[in-house]
Image (cartoon, rainbow, N blue to C red):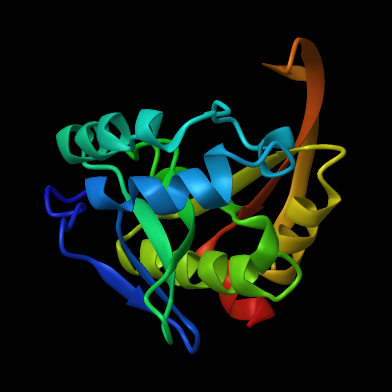
Length: 187
């Protein structure tokens, strides 16, 4: 992979959204849309935060800057409101040119196509960066997340039994993937 993989000024634009590098100033919006909503956190691996003054994305921002991974705030183009986030969960290397992506969006924005739109744009972005394979995983009960992956043309790769320990229980997960060749065939 190129040393120029990470661009701290990257912006991805869609018809309705901007995906901008997550900033420390996005903490309040992430708190309200993700970290303070137990329904959102049912399947998204982030802690519940009770009070806004305890909310921070500093460690995520610092980690991404240090390791060259992307964390995008998802903004509504019309209002510039941060409604969610999309993260690069793994780093590509010289042997494996793949990344795993994860995403979460505020509940009041569910079922409006925003998450699929953001993931589809991120897929295009990472393929343009030279990534060969993109994966996403979800807890098997998370039908909405699975639907997002399928809407973006991702292909079922497999089931992993008791892969994840979350909320005091082991969960099965499913993984979906996409390569540039499959992406171009499907789109």
